[in-house]
Image 1 (spheres, rainbow, N blue to C red):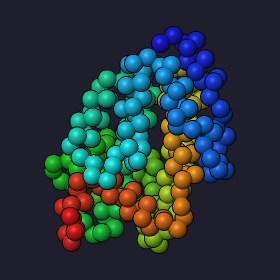
Image 2 (image 1 turned 90 degrees about the vertical axis):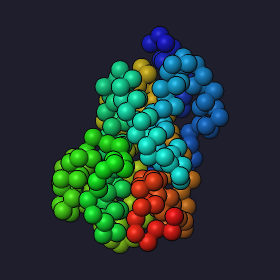
Image 3 (image 1 turned 120 degrees about the vertical axis):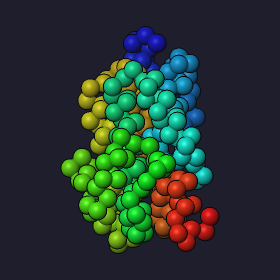
Amino acid sequence: MAENAYYTLLTSLPHIDSLFDSKITPISRLQLDRRLSMLSTEDRDTLIKVEQLMHWSHLGEDVNEAALIRLAARLSSELTSDTLKDLVNWRLDMRTVVAALRRKMRGAQAPGDPQWSYGSRYAYIRRNWSNPTLGLQHAFPWIPTVIECLNKQDYLTLEKTLLEAVWRKLDDASRKHSFDFEAVIIYVLRWSLVARWTAYDGEQAMERFRELTDQALGEFVKQLPGSAA
């Protein structure tokens, strides 16, 4: 797809000011999808795969971890953009870290084989299981806050912390891209965060958190002692 086509697409989309100050999405998903139809078939296919790997809501409650790992590995090998590779790998690392912290809270042992989650930090987490922050607090500064939220069962703050972390990562990526395919994907991912937050009901924080952690743990949660599954 020509660069001027990306420019035309992006200038047709309303600006997204912020995450937590938004009351509604700046454009409906139906309208957004109509604008995205300007993308080539190859670009749309890549966008769908990136969305599937970047958001819990696209994974489903009964996510097949083996299938997810295969999809992530295949997409990583197919992506030619370093920015998109970094975004996907970072997001999946985040997912693995959250799952690991949740598992530690339950008193589980270090993860073993077969691999139960995709991410470049999986082996590192195994080696540093005894470390309260898994030795990753510098790479992921939000880990201490997540641990505190888990201990306090403060699910609203946890949700906000994780959404804000993704938002900041997208902000960092956006500084290198203005009117290209990466900028389109960053816009869609930002839109998805706003959609998730504006649909959030604080009174259902417990249920949403359980959904989040179940999706993060995937099939592994079924193996935990005392699991109802």
